[in-house]
Image 1 (tube, helix red, strand yellow):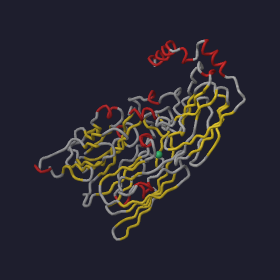
Image 2: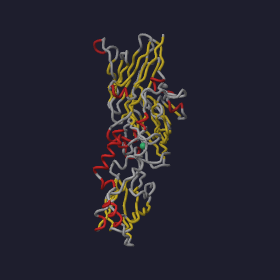
Image 3: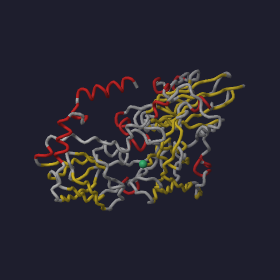
Image 4: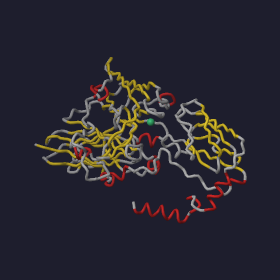
Length: 460
Ligand SMILES: [Cu+2]
């Protein structure tokens, strides 16, 4: 905090004009606002994460009126540094932004999360003599809340969640009874293949991500990760996406091979689409929102797992699912920090959406029980090196095949880590030889320490 304050003070001392503190700047700002009585009207279109044109000119003293059309498939807006705004525009909508008399060069941008960083900016250039010496406008970082507290400041590694905290349920239901079917979806089987009917609702939800730290997540059905879909090779999934959020969202299922053109399109708030795929290959597959910037939509919580059992998958005593992802904290209760996401500067790395949740609520098994842990790395950016402290994996299945089974070719092989790049997945199998507390982590240790750890509590 002290460092930040110092930086601000030094900044003012070294750049008085930018801070608008000198007499010269003040007087020239006053002299630049001589209204001509004229009005300049310009047409601007939002399309492909750009404003077109990207720069508009207005003669000094003229009133500027911007006729803004959203020619895109996603929701956009235009916010000017002065505070004037178009409000959110649905695809195809047109509105008028009255910028008033523009005294000096100024910026505009789309305030939908992440869009400004992707280049949705508009420069307003004032032409004519009066504008030359005017001070640059002070930008209000709409949506980024630069003056709000960064929720990362509230992270306390020693804090406990509230007594009524409930961990995301890592226990996996068998293929015949996936999480979706348990929560209202349906499935029917014809000639051995099952058709699963699933509804995924894109919803904003304020959720705790670490003790005392909440974020406004973008979710499927209100939870992070989203619902688990599980089936067998040959099963068909008929997924209905309902966009109940405030901006555009979409779906991308890695579990099905098909043309993305139609089914992966972004739909506007209030719209619905149907995405049907057949799972012809086994493994654990990521699904996610694929609306730009995808890094931000995934980091905000829009991901989940589809598990397609390999044929002959043996029964075990316990099956769990752990999905690793990163969090890039914005203000308390606010959206993720799009700039941190763009920089890959994460605050937390977590399993199933909450820092260290299975350290607080351990997974409980008995000595000698057979345990299978499915792991998916949802990213958006970081790899996972899944490891159980004190454990050794007797089997490893990664990206569609057994890497190790029955001791491998030597009959004596074991494994210590399941290595996964973003979007990769697999499972490990082990049993625990004696009672105790066995931590599990990503062995990228800084990530484990920033949230990606849990515990197995093993009793006799
Ligand atoms: Cu999305």
